[in-house]
Image 1 (cartoon, rainbow, N blue to C red):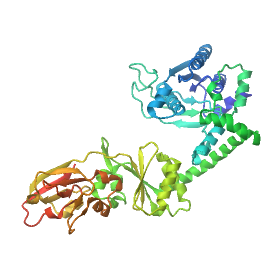
Image 2 (image 1 turned 90 degrees about the horizontal axis):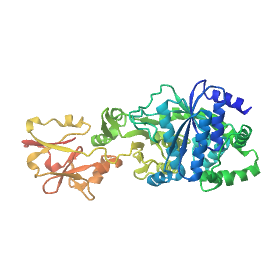
Image 3 (image 1 turned 60 degrees about the horizontal axis):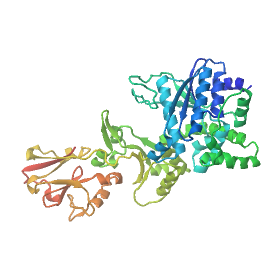
Image 4 (image 1 turned 30 degrees about the vertical axis):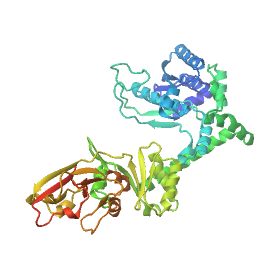
Length: 498
C-alpha cells in the first residue's frame, strides 16, 4: 500500500513517467526509503543520488558514504558524492555547524540541478519534521509564513551559471553547465508520512539505512524539540504529529487565500523603484534635492539604478487598522527579522527624528524620515563624488532658471572673490556655512536639515573651501553669499558634481 500511495502522491506533485529526479540521500532511514520508493514506483524515473559527507562524525560519516555507494551500485543508480569541511566553513562564516551544513548541501544540490537538468530535487522530510519545524518556528518567532510549515513542492529559479562555477568537483575543465528549459522543483514526497510509517517500510522491504548518532543528542535546537519536547506533547495528545500536520495544512490553505489580499494591499501601500528614472519621475522627486537624487543612484552598464527600492507613506500606512501587520508584510521580504520589524513599528509610533534599521543580511536599510518609510540598498557611498571646477567668461553663464532644472545643479560664483587654491572635503563636525540669503552663518548639518536632505546621505555631502579654509560651497547644493555672482562679475567659477 505504501508504494501504491507513494506513486499516486508523487504523480500529484507533478512527477511524470521518465522524469529526471535527483534524490538527496544521507543514508538515514528517511532518505533511503525515499530513494527506494522512487526506484519502485513504476514510473520509469531517471534517478540519481546526491550524497554529502560533512566530515563531522569521523568513521561514522565514512561508513554512511560507503553504504550509500554500495546501495547505488547494487541498484544501478548514478551517484554524485562530495565532502565538505563543515566546521571550517562555519567558523569562517560565523554561523552554526547546522546552518553551515544546510548552506553547503543545498548550494551543491542546486548546482547539480543546473548542470544535469534534473526536473526534481527530492528531499526526505517527513510529517514529524514538519511538526518539529512548526514548533521551532514558533519558538524562534515567525510570521504567517512560519506557521505554514515545510512546502511539499517549491519551484526553483536559478541565475545563469557560468562555466566552471560548479563546486564539489562536479564540473571538469571545459565542461559547461547544461541549460534546462523545463521547470525545476524541490519536492518532499515523504511529507505526508510519519517517521513510524517510514520505519515500517524499511523493515518490510529490507531497506538498509544507518542511524546518525548525533540525532540522539540534544545539542541542536531541532534535536531538543524532537527528543525532549515532542515526547512530552505526546503525553497530552498521542496524535500530536498528525494534529500539527493537519493544522499546517489549514494554515497553508488560509495562507493561499490571504496571500492574494496581501499582494494587493502591499501594491497599494508601496511605491517601488527598479530604475533611477522611476524615482525621478515619481511624486516623491520633489521631496529630494538634486544631490539627494544623485546619491540615490548607482551607475551600471544598463543605466542608473535607484538605491531606494521602496517608499511607504506613513500617513497612508497608519490609516490601516492593523498597520503593524502590514509593516511586517512589507519589511519581512526585505530580510528584516521579526524583532527588527517590531523596532520599526515602535519607531513609527514616535515623532522624534530619523531612525535607521539594518536587515539581517545587511543588504537593505529601512529609514523612517519625514513621513516616509524607505527601503534602500545598503551602500554607504555609491560612488566617490568628484568635483569639477572651471573658470568661464561671464557670457557663458546660464540663468538661475536653467540651473534649477538640473537634478544636481551646476553652481556658479564670482571667480575674483575666491582665494585659490581650493579644497574639497567631507563635512566635519562644527562646519559652518553662510548660504545666499542668510545673514550670518549656520551649521552645515542644520542647513542640510532645513533643506530636508536625506539623513541616510548626510555623510556623503562635500564642502568646498578656499585657501583661507572658509566654506564657499556645498557642491550640488548651494554657494556662500560672499562669492555670489553680481552685475560687476567678469569671470565665473563653475562647479559641477560628476
